[in-house]
Length: 84
Image (cartoon, rainbow, N blue to C red; front, side):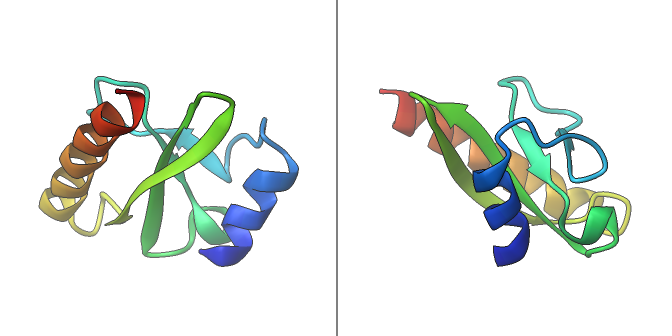
């Protein structure tokens, strides 16, 4: 995960397969996909105030849909706190 975050810091426009929009989200949260999506973990983040804010770490959705959805809900709640 740390290597993927470093790549995001270097290239804020990092695209697929390294990042994608988190499906099921309503607030534009994106998922960081370590190892080009081959990792079982996803970092949920969004840009806020000129910075990249890591909001939660989630299991990969195809392996654990409920865990992903729970982490996404947590990320969106935290985003609300960050933006206030």
